[in-house]
Length: 423
Image (cartoon, rainbow, N blue to C red; front, side, top):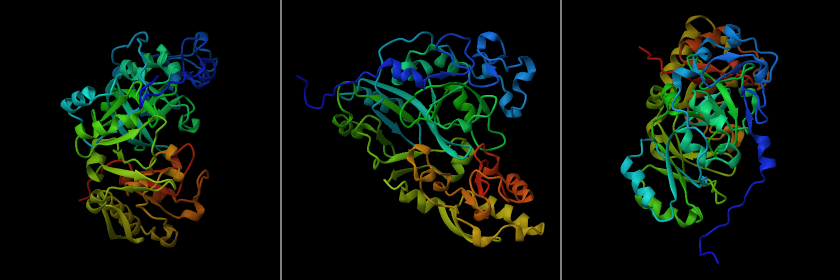
């Protein structure tokens, strides 16, 4: 007879879960399914050999034709040690602790000693904008993280070989339109954001959209060691969380990933890219069933401002973004283009919610107050839109990414992608 708080683990039939595992560019075998025209080996070389399962790859320099220059980096430059074959045991991913700051080693040790905790894994976690979606991207030790994933992913050596080799593993729940035709995934919205080859689509951990290794994480500017993945073994998470709250530092938030997932639990939002994150701040927030969220009041009081800008008048935005917005709109006025932005069709800036009010799609960058929607009626999602390309060029000059460049277009949308000092 099991004690109070114990739970039964349910085994997922292997035949059903294999369908969710797709490897990109693997060298053949029954567990490899080629999806894209170009292939990339874990060492970064490209190939179009028959063994890759594709007849469309061309090999050599042509293999990256059409890929943005930022995508052409050599994955081997970001390689870490190969984790080797899977080594049990599997660890259920029960709790995710996140913080706006690195979690000290002493805290990690205290968490590990807490009664009911069977395993703890430190990782680095940030929100990242990609093609109109805000994704949770984790920088991890591939060998340690794989043990917290579903059994099909954990046992797929090729997935973790590719992550260790500098590629990205993506949860299959993400829409394939985020991938470009050559199998690359732009991790960020700025022109300088790297495009990393997708090594695999594989089930990961609830709440984490994609994983890279720690070396890639540093390239992306992901805050280091600001999260903990915790397994509570045979105990339900609710039996362990009270004791964990006593040892976690102030500002840390804890999310239940197991079946006890609580939509109302406080969570943490940290943007990737140190300069942008420092400029606009990080915050905890509480999600609500209707898809809106409530950021912590201290962050709102510190960063969200109502100020006047050219053309639009008063805007309610993040104070870290407003100077760049004012500069972009000021240049629009100076060039005699003000009539091409319609103040009556402005749809706001600071709107704390999930994208399309769906938690599965991640936080909208409007939650940070660093995005604006302009000329809404003529620039709907999925269309080319009517946005004047001179306006687009000005906004890009002042550090904004444009939704019209995304695979699934959103031409009304401009979001702060990099810091530009306005003098």
